[in-house]
Image (cartoon, rainbow, N blue to C red; front, side, top):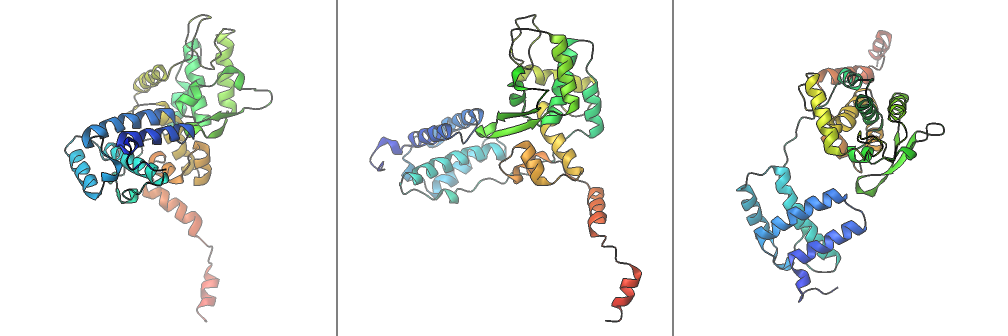
Length: 315
């Protein structure tokens, strides 16, 4: 395709085509695309709506200098560079000779310590809500479901009552971030909690598995409402960490599984990550040296007896 003498080589047009492709191929989640579109708009305000062929090494250097003048984290600054790389890559696929996007290097992001809840804290959290009220039973069911499924909060709250059949299977197939298919598992504890919640909730006109409390006219529970409820619950329990759905279902469970010896590939599959690097960098808490010693002893003890060592002295 020949865009050389066309406005289609303007940065805004190149990014529009990139986003159209990403949406059509479901490469990125809708929320991610929206976030990047906002960054793209700010990028154009910094660079201007320049011709993509005018982007070179100096353009990237000047962009980095301007970003360094702003109070932005390394991760946030990298979002701008990702947009530059994406626009260049899009034009390259279209046959336009542009600056090599591989030469657009990103800022180094400091490794953050991954916070998580211990197994004991998860047990306290799961049993804390009242089992006498509809809101308490709903919170119990949600926490148990987060622990069992490892779901993102939007995926869990997006489930409908008819998607779970306790008589035949408790494995539910859903579409996740990036539109990837994923199967989730409800363990016995989460099944029981959901059944108790639905029994008290009774018949209503809301199809959502987790609904607001409003007689027969309840609606799907929203992410913000759940986040606020969990945050308040964590404070009441005296936790020194902000309790979120993500902390429970993703970071804490991933770390717990890893410490219990679950292979990294299984954890990656459980979280439905496309890369194991994402799993280790953002979801598994830092292990202390005692963990290293424990696994070293289990693996490195080859059972070499003294008699074997004596035999070796004769070689």
